[in-house]
Image (tube, rainbow, N blue to C red; front, side, top):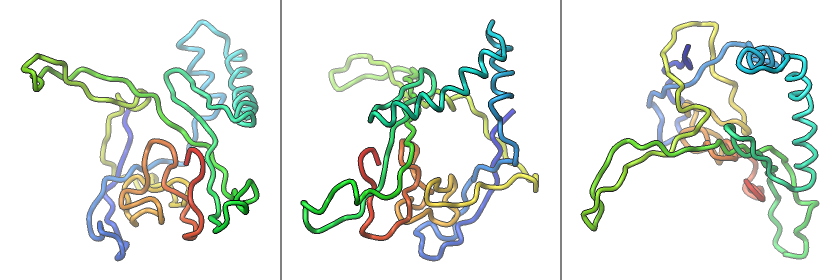
Length: 199
């Protein structure tokens, strides 16, 4: 199996990437729901599906609880989740407070790991390992071009950005449709609004 993509051309005349072609991820309308996820995990572990589903059902409430306490949540093998937000800018420091906070979002920072890819000599002429940092969840994903008309890119929005940048991203998303480490593409708000803590 593989992650499918299509070649799409940037149509945004205001973008520095206008006219360029990008490999853009495409998806069908099917979501892997909790039931299917629990069924898969049951086949990989010696735990009953009903127990797995019960834990997964509670995960959202547990994360919500710790978000309300201002905590970051780290899931081994997955990554870190935390609360982010945007804030309206004001001229006077005394006027800046919780009332200026607008869009709330959940930020995700994937877990990474270092993989040795070879050896090289450093400035002191010592042999050292060369490595790359990869995101654990997607390091083994294979990409494949598709012509299936049932598969399409996710609709563009300020929250998600677009993986191929076909329209140049949103105001904060740049030409490739956002970044991968947290705030995924900005919110496309006005100039007085900017990401707040964690954003």
